Length: 271
Ligand SMILES: NC(=O)c1ccc[n+]([C@@H]2O[C@H](COP(=O)([O-])OP(=O)(O)OC[C@H]3O[C@@H](n4cnc5c(N)ncnc54)[C@H](OP(=O)(O)O)[C@@H]3O)[C@@H](O)[C@H]2O)c1
Image 1 (cartoon, helix red, strand yellow):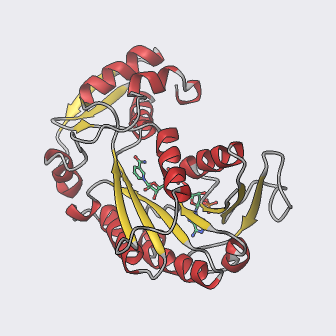
Image 2 (tube, rainbow, N blue to C red):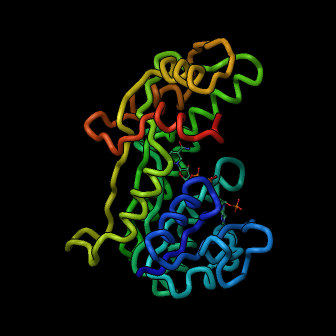
């Protein structure tokens, strides 16, 4: 049995990792700024997870959340504004608190080839990766390709106004959120100590197939039954550049078996 702390364990991936870890018999503490109502600070909620309120940006609550944990899994997010600017610093704060609490390993979730893009969002991920690589702790960065849910969210948002957007020329090797959570947990639980000289490792995971965004949009419409005109458009700027160069792909790495279609078919709440 391993004692795990999942930073951002109320989010999409953190929640799946927490559930999986509890199912496997591990002890799980989750922290976020807004834990589920009524569950925060209790010994363990109905789902077997202990929820705490802590903020990686201010450092508030981190010592308590990390105390007694063997491993921390970092599923934090910082999409825009100050959260984006402080994303890497929050990672450093988390690692310092983890080291002080005697945590032996930290696993963080990042984005495939984020260091090859100048987009601010990706640059913040790359900055945090450097923080992990320089940490004295045993650390693992798991770089994932785009999640199936990201594409489904984009299609669903467009369909609200009758359009299903498809970036011209963009291909994706999207991956199932639960397979990402499983990979994170596997890294968290892998035998220790790391091989000599491998204090930090980076692992890349990308989904089982590569499809154009247009093909994915067509599948989304067919499986969900939602209506909308598929509209292809060019994406300028750093994000467009990242996609045009195929930096979101790793054709030699096919992780998992859950395709966009099979994930959609079994995920009714994404429809
Ligand atoms: N979407 C993709 O395709 C994709 C692909 C590869 C990697 N990723 C990366 O994977 C990571 C996890 O993604 P996700 O979709 O699971 O994110 P998410 O659903 O937005 O979850 C983020 C979690 O972090 C918590 N959080 C945010 N700021 C915090 C802070 N300062 N202190 C404490 N908790 C904080 C949030 O809860 P509160 O708001 O309540 O604090 C939430 O629990 C992200 O870094 C994302 O960029 C995403």
